[in-house]
Image 1 (tube, rainbow, N blue to C red):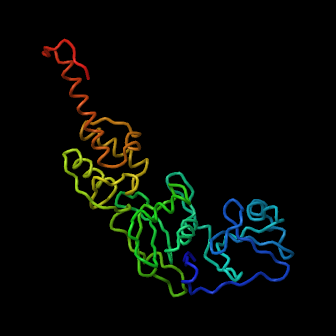
Image 2 (cartoon, one colour; image 1 turned 90 degrees about the vertical axis):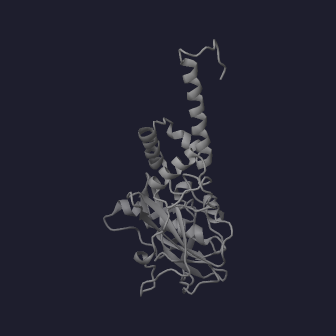
Image 3 (cartoon, rainbow, N blue to C red; image 1 turned 180 degrees about the horizontal axis):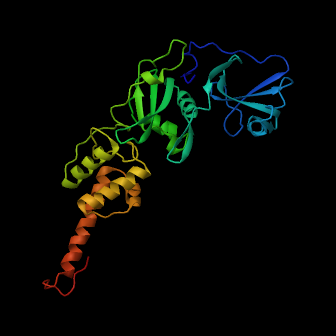
Length: 298
């Protein structure tokens, strides 16, 4: 199950309270208690706790851990305490992927989303674009329309590393469900564009148009405006390397990959390219034997 719902807007049934002589804890990834209403991983302790897995010492070490609260079992289940003390089950933590060298728990991203007061439901999957590059896509059901498109990405960045922030956000009236009440991932619509779409301003200069066309091709987008950020509309280190390589091969413009990290907004990168071109043109004039000037200051 990977359906997360905001407290007060849920129709799921709480799993209740622990029985006698059993302790239930809900921790974050640092084994700190999470506040009421905030998702975390469920740990179990008490007299009924097993010694471990039979003939599986590696799994025993992974799941049965020593803490300041005693020996606990790491369940791999996500949940949260409700205000009356009951526990609501939210899904599994082991929906793990590997993307661009990082191991990412999709359930952790979903849990972070529902800690936002305006997010009612959340599901996160990985989609491939036309170039077979993987993108994290979030499907959200909101309590109200969000005026600022950067609100949710900025909220996620305050809670998760940048590489865990989805490339695309898709807003739905409700999440598609299977007959047994789970999110139907196969029925989630593929986004039209990979990336967070902000206010679109069309490119004006020759360089801006060149960069816009190349970014659209590499990032599989229908449009790229001058205020779009390469890394916020689906770009990453591999696509940045591909872009710089194509820029060099097709247009004989030689720049370092790090320059795109320094100037990730199309308008800024365009001005950076134009500045380089102007300097090169001045240098060519200086080196021209027909130049009558004895000295030129750049």
